[in-house]
Length: 85
Image (cartoon, rainbow, N blue to C red; front, side, top):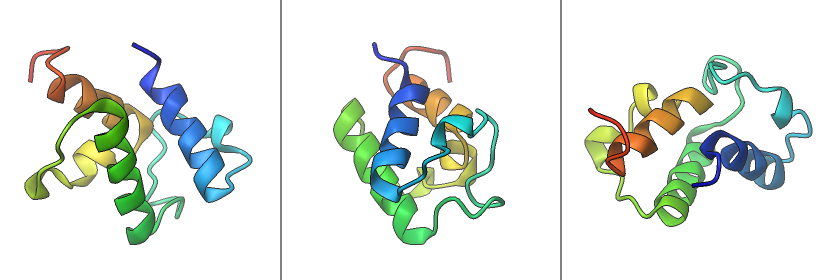
């Protein structure tokens, strides 16, 4: 599988004109650093569903799953059964 973090960085760079998306650390909070707003999070979630073939349930739309590159990678890996929950 392609590197989830690299793919999400590319998505952020291309869709939100974040030239410094490469500089975003794996643990950088999207909310605390005002990288994404609520509409941006919805676009990110739609990208994740389409790209990785997962269904994001309403109760899963929490910072623990989507507020950083590291959280997204862990979420996708858990949803795809690549790591234990």
